[in-house]
Image 1 (cartoon, rainbow, N blue to C red):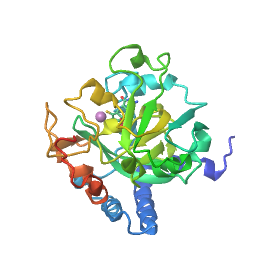
Image 2 (cartoon, rainbow, N blue to C red; image 1 turned 45 degrees about the vertical axis):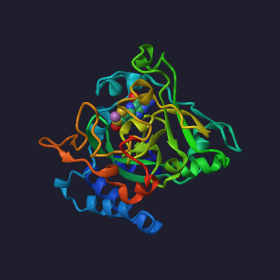
Image 3 (cartoon, rainbow, N blue to C red; image 1 turned 135 degrees about the horizontal axis):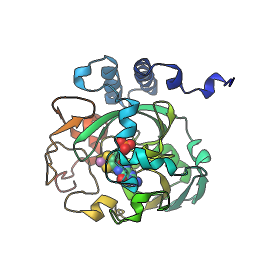
Image 4 (tube, rainbow, N blue to C red; image 1 turned 135 degrees about the vertical axis):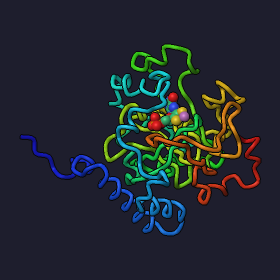
Length: 308
Ligand SMILES: Nc1nc2c(c(=O)[nH]1)N[C@H]1C(S)=C(S)[C@@H](COP(=O)(O)O)O[C@H]1N2
Ligand SMILES: [Mo]
């Protein structure tokens, strides 16, 4: 018989999923309350989710939904391709190259990198630019805590992220669907925002490969394509970095990609979305995906129609 220490057992394994969900929501709300009033909207959202108001659509999606309906073109373009094909990817050992405008460049072992801060629970909405959405209970560490360890220079204004390039294990990279490797970027203040997370897990389990193991970005107020998976490099820059979808199609995908129901995609409306798992109807899309109280200030004075 295999006997494990209780703390080796993910809570999700010993708690039925619906109870786990409620408990996590409660924990998240409590943690944010302790953190003070700096992110009142998040606390409020967490409390609302805890109220079991299913009609709001704020109940977390199931583990099954989150891990079988994915966008990850390195493993194919159909939603079920990543869950079918990503199992072969080797995510250990893993290191992240840190460079550019920092005092402390260098290669970090994944284990050392995620040890720079305590792992937190964050239940976030994820809104894909394709107009579907989910609610995902992530675990991860704030990107800000990571970046501080690299000591950005005063000249640093942006952060560039790069996905692993390994066509032998990522069959989508054997075709020119997108320019590889996948790259993304944030303004430094967006990257330092307390909502910006480096995710290492979901539902209390290690991040599945199809969701971006072992380390993926989560920027909940932006369209999902900003949340780059399987990160192997982080570079601080003084110029806005090129990003994969704006290279592929600059008319349709911009650098900012803030969720905005008032600015339609050239080929479809962004005013509403299809919540995965909800059988009928669509739900209204919220400005900044509902995180405006926390992040709108980052964009004051900016023309959000031009900076899409
Ligand atoms: N490297 C990489 N990261 C990526 C993508 C991708 O194709 N490659 N797809 C993006 C898109 S479009 C979305 S919507 C989210 C989906 O994340 P999920 O599969 O965990 O829900 O991942 C983003 N990160
Ligand atoms: Mo997406």
